[in-house]
Amino acid sequence: MNKAQAEGMFGYFRMVLGVTRNLIDQFPADKMNFRPTEGTRTVADTVVHMYTFLVEALETIRDGKFEMGEPPVFETKTEVLAYMDLQVERAYKIFESLTDEQLAAMITSYGQSMPAWQFLTFAYDEHWHHRGALTVYLRLCGIEPLMIYSYGE
Image: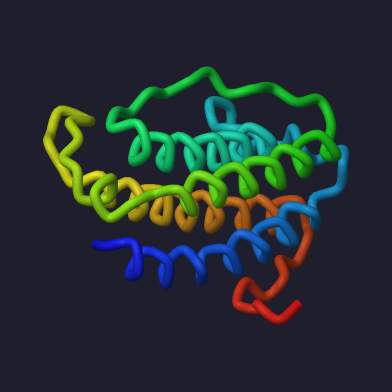
């Protein structure tokens, strides 16, 4: 995948991230620590995981190696939403700086060698599967999730 192809994918993903932000905003502040069962992530932990990995994936492409950091912990919904916004801004700043060469470079991660652009698809897949789980969390909290394909809103 070259930069022009990635721009199409990531342009669409920007809309997806906006819808996800609206979805997370549906959670009442007192439900950010909700978890459906013991041993699962809370709403806040899931969101932080998603948006931490978003930036880590792009840093991997830029830097040529994957490094997983310790995710931050937040106490309030306001802090979580602000973190989401910051991470999206950081991710797109990194994305804009990427070159065809960086996207094509081979990286060894998860015990295998792969082209760096594969981390774009990892970020994509990671986002979708956790967002799906968060729609279930909303329903478990008695909240009807917004239409996730409402890109114009």
